[in-house]
Image (cartoon, rainbow, N blue to C red; front, top):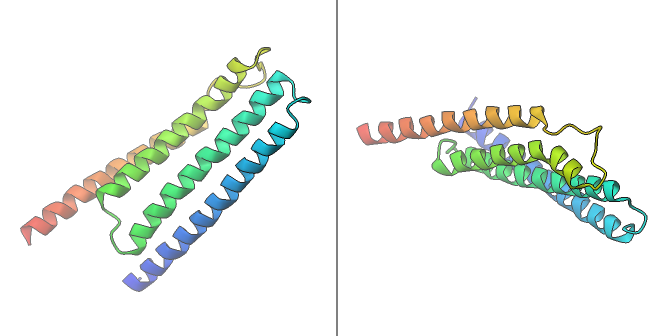
Length: 151
């Protein structure tokens, strides 16, 4: 696979992630407006559940933004840069935040949410996986720097 194909794929993935981010942010804004319009009809539990959905969409938008930036640098032929390590770590932190959302929304509601789990294990597993990937990228950055210094 030539470098041109890799760069083209990186640009396409970057555009896809940017488009997904726009859709998610727009959806979050629309849901926030609906919450504002329907505030009188929501119970307290419904309000916190809706707010949880808006926060979740905003976290997904942040993830898509960081992924678009990551794919953009990969499309330029430079995947192992320190900025990508930071981007992957911020994506992992967003997943950690999503792991706490169900329990936080349930605890903030006056009646509680007995049907909601306190933590989302799936989000923590994704966070661990992406954090591990960031460590691989960090090691790749160190190897690339060592390679540049020896030449």
